[in-house]
Image 1 (spheres, rainbow, N blue to C red):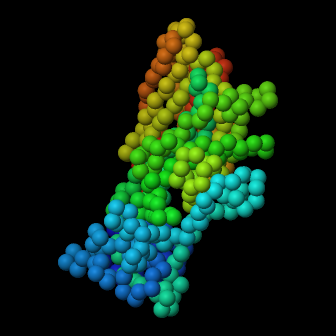
Image 2 (spheres, rainbow, N blue to C red; image 1 turned 180 degrees about the vertical axis):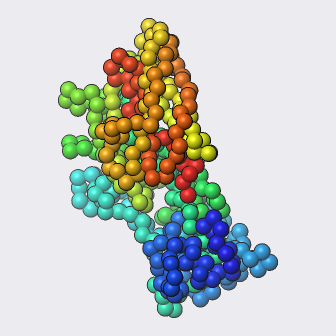
Image 3 (cartoon, rainbow, N blue to C red; image 1 turned 90 degrees about the horizontal axis):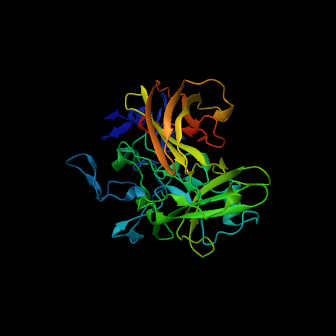
Length: 394
């Protein structure tokens, strides 16, 4: 019938599918059902199922949409697993899971495969024939702008706090049309809903590894991870900052040494993070674009662990933009789109907060980074933090 905001409205035509997934001209149903342009995070999309007609009692004929009780898209059959009475399944993916964590340097274990990129989620499209037919109706209410439902790491630079701990913050995404977007509660792995899993991260370098798991679950919304007190997170030899590789994962338990269920995340590559030894004064900064994409609002928290205030301190703020396709870290990228020096008295033994705005126009081809530091105070820099532009992401 039509495509609006990346959503196909029933009845579904071949041209609707082509328009939604960006396939120009031509293309029969079989070709479209296996196209690499299909967004696998859409709730309604072609999946492998041994039925000719997906409608089979799950279609609201009066309103021309799927019933709220429809569950074919979860790849569930009669008698399948349920959570709270609701069928759950793999939602079109093949997802490998392990019952033990293992060691990052032991071949064949979950940890080894995780850090070497040997795990992932595979979107299993229909294969054709009577066992897995192509169905045009699978594209009804297909949402091309769906997002992965489990988020990403908030930043790549960290300071130890005064307890020698680090908190890894995880940004949970918000879909524009959540009813058409897969959610963690839709998945069941080992008969366990993914929203009941915890967030885990493994850090490693050329000499050792460390594993941390959140106390809360994805379902609770509290999945930030606080590490143990450990100065070696930031100190290696005489250096007072340390670079790690980091890879997130799902864990059913909070103790990775116990038998449980461990799962990789889809479309996630190792990221490189830096953990710095805290100074007596250090900055933490957060920033986001406004809805119009014309202004960046930022908040700087200046932590002063000394008993002496700093009167009329100079606080420097800088925003850079680098091409989204660039692998160059922001600190090595020349030029900036905004900088400012703010005069601020920093109170003793507490956190002083500065809020400000910068007139910066959003460009989707770039990623924006912000940094703050107290001039003349060693180790006070926040490092570069990514400016939140989630409001513009599909």
